[in-house]
Length: 86
Image (cartoon, rainbow, N blue to C red; front, top):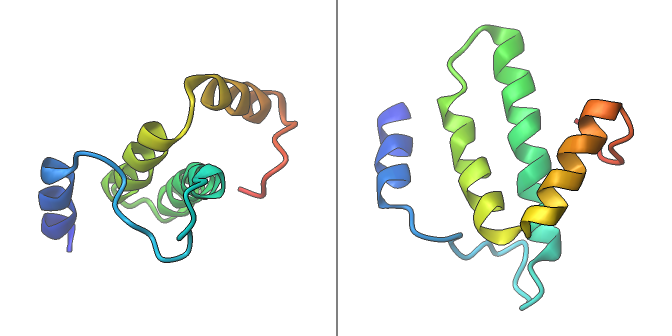
């Protein structure tokens, strides 16, 4: 499975189509991948497993989200005021 993920990451160019977000506005897709990345990291860190599979979410949110949003959310997570459940 990790090999499949590595192959996908190597071929990655931009966020692929996600049927959960069929509309042109990708704001929700950006948010969901940001939250999924940190949830994935938290879950795999707790198990003591390699967090490399989580990189997929990071690449997707970095290609979809404006940098100002990412910086704001990172600051909120550090301050403990992030509105999402991670």
